[in-house]
Image (tube, rainbow over the protein chains, first blue to last red):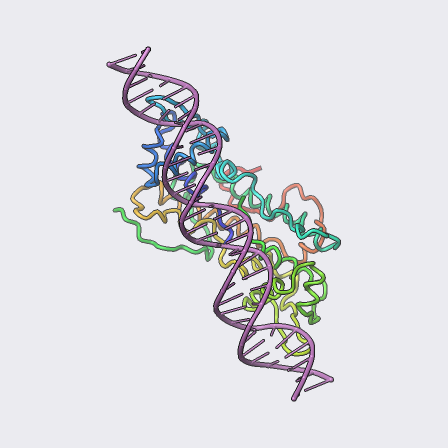
Length: 153
Length: 153
DNA sequence: TTAATATAGTACCATATCAGTCCTGTTTAA
DNA sequence: TTAAACAGGACTGATATGGTACTATATTAA
């Protein structure tokens, strides 16, 4: 299914929410409420984002988090990497060991190429864009769109 | 880490190996030897590839598998989809239920856009290309072609 | 100085998913 | 009829992930 982890998904939600209040310090508690996620989960995500330098943390009684960069200059790829580490498709196509075949080696370099392309796809989308309901729709592929019951007017 | 499953990785290996003998019928046993994978594993992968119509199977004493299409016209994406199903990044960004916020909804459509770009990245690489040790380091790989509504070097 | 609040770091567990194997049935050729 | 090879599905062990909890530390206000 080629998915990103839920935690990364949450991280995007949190960052987008934070970007709505750029410049301000928002507590994890508040972010949890707005994203409808559990506080411990949001907290975990924020810690990871903090280590990656995407948010700055403030301790103490009026503490919280603040976005470090502009939403337009932070990419989805950066957020995902903060949570999951480097973007790559395979550990190494030849991990079976005994790479003694041409074919296997050719795979490895090609996987790296594909990984780059995928990474670029995600580097090309900023948080600012994510916050907007989709600038322009394009030839929609057959990508699965699950439940469509959005509960708001 | 944004990874594909090992099974998909294996599937590519098997398909590339099969393409080296395009037109011929090769047994799972033989493919297992050439890829250095275990027979049951290779067998499992081949069954999935067969159901997806990427290979044709032949039972009986001289049975085996044969590629259905040309290696140049079969993409990495097709193979991965045969193993993992539709390529998508997230189940649905709003699976938390209670999508009552603008931000969440904007995420969903954007994820679809990203998924499309990622899918395209993998549709742009054929098995024939995978079999070659990497044609040449291309400065601007034409694979990605993500919707460049923003300037993207 | 102390109390309250909020994050940091780490560790833990339950669960879901995946990889890998095996078993039984079916088809085909000799 | 037998052996070889695939089809389908079930089962299991391992791994990773998601989610939570606990302790320590920092900050602010009274």
